[in-house]
Image (tube, rainbow, N blue to C red):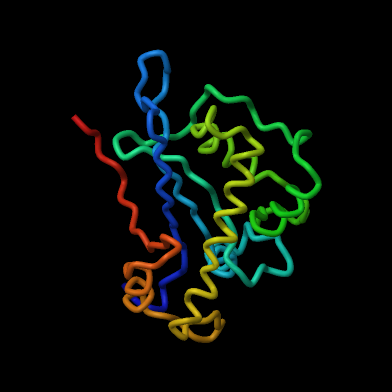
Length: 196
């Protein structure tokens, strides 16, 4: 991979196994999640790749949340329908403020738009229900993002944002593969194959 074409996307996995939970209960229509993957994006890379879609100014200079994906090692979880639809009226001002800061919609010029949050709730978040309500799921995403201070972690290895310098994939990958206390890993996520 050409180091100049490397654009940063970080997938942070947090293992959250719940003892005593039957993940494939016959009374449930959908398999339950076993862990979260926090997907972070570097806004400048997004705006570089999607210049025609990027509508946020100024562009954030820190990693933002793309999504919090409940997942299962056996079955890909997506588009679960057993949870309520997104309800913005139940969000507190404090939570909305945090979401606007850490989970902005880079395609929307309205800084208070929650369209990305809403779409991620419908596509992924509802798969964490009933263990996480909509509000609990959104707070979990914010809390994990605060735990995953990727910029500080990269600075420890002298890697910092620079619009004129590109970082090769190999040093960055090495940083995240090494064990770290926060559980951060840079993951290359292949499409899951059907399990027989």
